[in-house]
Image 1 (cartoon, one colour):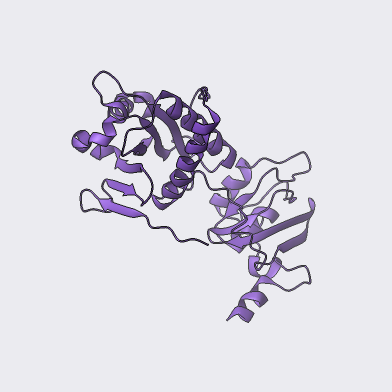
Image 2: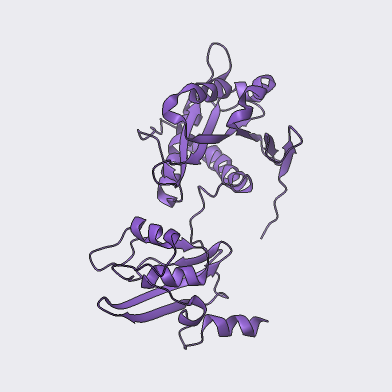
Length: 289
């Protein structure tokens, strides 16, 4: 795997302040801006150019991470991104966002066609990944882009995805990828008979983020008070069919939380998650040590 050199510059000398991000051999530039620090950006000339931006926060209703995907073209006052972010700060309908991440270019090559394409692409990608609730009321239009220009934009998109993760948001990273489902990491299975509910059958794998219960797993149709409220909330929010079979992958913080998610009751994940040949996760971890 090729390494990546990402340059982070703390504009305020504070990890909680504004951050400028760039990387060699890429004309793009990113800014991570806390909402409270937006007024300090008036001297940043590249934020007066065209680009795409993302507003991050949490939903007051669900507590889920939310994102708004937007674009900003140059205006008469030449303050494209900066002016758009200031408008959002004044908009009472968007009180939820606490920080913005904006992407533009060092040579100002992003025109109306390019930013429309990028906005549409990132909106659809965030919706498909489904880690964040996307708050856009309308689907952005992709515009008309040539195949040559699209090739350029796909390279731009590749860097944006990397830098977005570096800046703390995995909004474009699927819970399950070819990387975190490496063949060296064993598939684990959970089967258990639940009284008055029937048999639950699930499969999952550990990843760098926690434990993923995979799509197609059958979970208990109801739960009890022996599981944490956070697990109850995840159970209530997931999409299942009429047989309580998951319609998507679900990330939990630990194997035990994943086991309780499946069973709907207190369950030791180290004992109940097993390999195909019956070895428990606890046995696997002891062997590793």
